[in-house]
Image (cartoon, rainbow, N blue to C red; front, side, top):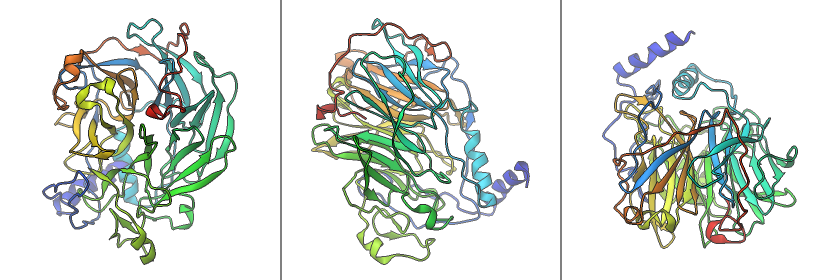
Length: 477
């Protein structure tokens, strides 16, 4: 069936009243309202209209400015701020799962139209501000990788989670290029790769790495055999590569981070599709060792998904609720804890990169939000921090993915549609203390550097600051 014929089905489905969006319930927070599941021929689907930024910029709260520090990248996903202030960017596109049904083909077309046409770089790019003037040069640190995604630094070892293996490079402070090919730490599940991203975080003591491994389907359409070692988080010995299962039932744990001080592992997880526009909430949660989070048998605790046969009552009974709903289909792909250097109103909480929905008539996401914390728990509704990626008419200029907090006082955001790295900083001590982010402040920018014209620059003095895993207050991400 040709693409045009398949796409013609979408308005017909809407005309027939299939899966029409209802009034949106209260979807965020620790106790989201869960409507009845809705199923139909097709889910609601909205095509994003990619466009260049031109003279426009994302919006940030009053008292902050946003700058593009790198452009012309090749699908930037996640970033890592190194102890000397350099920024590593993982670039790539993975996954090649075959489509099972015509609706999968349609969904693939819709999703593809809202993504960059650039070929994934399969590389790490290093960004450096050599003289502290806010202008970054770009150089290739490592290439010929396999859809790199998660990044972590432990002592003098740089860990990269490719889609099929966790690898590591030797690293010295100020280094601008890998000294040789990476060493494989352990293979990672990569057959089919319906969800290919491999999120990564290092424990606060530097002894372990955590890798998020997504499911091989939306909801077991390929059978349970292909879900072996899927929808879970591994704990890996950083020295030996030996691994064990840390938590299960997480459909697609797309980003991991360590809470300062406590060393607690947190994750954002993308939940299942095709139960309607308001199910199932993507979520933020502290990951409990040995816990089961429901997939595929249930969601948000013990709400049974009737599409799964046979069911497993014992697993459902053991399923625990996540900590905090971000809303259905926001597609959270980045998470990191803030620091005092980001200003008083944004000092205690997490930033979350929301890539944005494709399967809602009323799109959600397409922004970076801040979730405030109190006593180690989410304590209020999410607040827009970086917005303006998508206009009301569907024009979409960017889609945020990874978010990383520079402990010196900046938020680094990877944008895999515009192929840009954004840097958000307080403009003044007074401005940083102003109210919660509304996404209505005027962004200010400067000319971004281009990764297509690498320049290694001069090595700044190395720092053993908060990025070291020996200091839990800023464990490596």
